[in-house]
Length: 248
Length: 221
Ligand code: HEM
Ligand code: SF4
Ligand code: FES
Image (cartoon, rainbow over all chains, first blue to last red; front, side, top):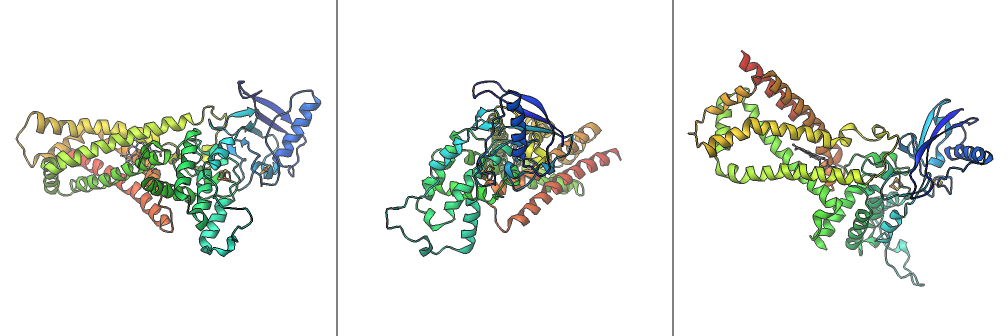
C-alpha cells in the first residue's frame, strides 16, 4: 500500500503546529496503525529527520494511551477498538490519511500527536475512589451481596480505560462519558454509597474546572468509545448529581 | 442547592426543563390553532379566552416569555462555552460518522426558530398588545379568525412559516428525546419515550405546516 499521510507536527507545547504531508510505501494490511507509524518513523530517522511523537504502551487495547484522531474520528474508522488495534487493511492503496492529536483545551499538546491527559487523573483524584482501611483487616468484597444487574453495569462502567476518545469525538470536547463511567462504577455498588454525594459533586466540579465542554447528548462519545461505555452512565451521573445537589 | 446553575450538568438540566416547557406550550398552541381550519367559531372562542383571561395574560404569558428568553440565552451560553472547549480545530472532523446532523446543529435550528419568533411576534403578538393595552380597542370576540386569515394571504409569509416549522422539527428531532437523557431518564422505557418524542417532533410541526397552507388556500378561494 502506498499512502499519503497528513500529520500534525508541533515542536512543543508552546510552538505553533501545522499539518505536514508524508508519502509512505510498503504498508501491509496486517500491520497495525501504530506499526505503520513505526515504519514512517524509521524512514524519518534514516533520513535524519525528527520522528513523529505519539503515545502508546500496551499495544493491545488495554492501557488507553494510544490516541490519534484518524480521518476525523478518534481511533480511526473502526468501532470498539483503540488505535493500536486498528489494522491497515481498513485503508486502501492511494488513500490520504489525516492524523491529528485528540483536540481539547483540557488536553494540551505536548509534542506532535502526544497530548497531556492528566485532566482525567485530576477528575479521578477528586473522588474516584472509596476510602477503606486496607491495613490487614480488609473485609472480603464477596461478603457484601450485590445485585447481579448492578454488578454487571458497574463492571461495564469500570472497563473505561481513560483513553479520551469520548472527549476527542465530542463536538463540545465534553468529558461526560469518562466522568460518568467513573462515577457509575461506584454509584452502582454498596461500597460506593458512603461517599456518593461528595464524589459526584467533586468529580463534576473538577471536570468543569478543567475546561471540558457541556454535553449536548449527540452520542458521538458512545459510538467512538473503544470499550462501548453506554450513555446510560451519563443519565445516571445526571441523576446522582441532582440528588447530591439537593442533599449537599 | 448552592451553585446549581453554575455547573455544566445544572445548565444542561435547565436547558432540558425550559425546552420541555416549550414543548408543552407548543402542544397547547397547536391544539388551539388546529381548530382554525375546521371551525372559525371554536378558534374565535378559544382565542378570545386566551386573549382576555387575566391568568393567561398576566401569569402564563410572562412565564412563557421568560421561558423562551431563558432557553435561547442559555443555548447561546452553552454554545460559546462548548466552542471554547476546543481551542484548536481539527483539520478533518468527521462529525457525521458518529452523531446526527440535528444533534450537532441545535444552535442553527434554534437560530432559525428564534428568527421565526421575531416574525411571529411582529405578526401577532405586537398587534395584539397594541390593540389591547395601547389603543384599548373595544374587544370583538369574533375578530380573531379574520385577523388570522389576513396573515396568510402572502405566499412568501406562508412559505417562511413552513420553512421555520421544518427547522423546528429538526430542533425537536434531537431536542425532545435528548431532554429525557438530560434530566437523568434513561431506562427500559427510553426506547418507547424516544419513539414518542421523534413522532411528536414530526407530527406537531407538520400539523402547523398544514394549518398555514390550509389558511393560505382558504383565503384565496
Ligand atoms: C428560540 C430559539 C431557540 C434557540 C436559539 C434554541 C437553542 C437550543 C440549543 C442550542 C439547544 C442545545 C443545547 C445543548 O447544547 O444541549 C437546544 C435544546 C433544546 N431545545 Fe431549543 N432553542 C430554541 C427554541 C426552542 C423551542 C421553540 C423549543 C420547543 C418547542 C425548543 C426545545 C428544545 C429542547 C427540548 C432541547 C433539548 C434540551 C436537552 O438536550 O436537554 N427549543 N435549544
Ligand atoms: S469512556 Fe470510553 S472513550 Fe471515554 S475515556 Fe473511557 S474508554 Fe475512552
Ligand atoms: S497502546 Fe495501549 S490501548 Fe493502544
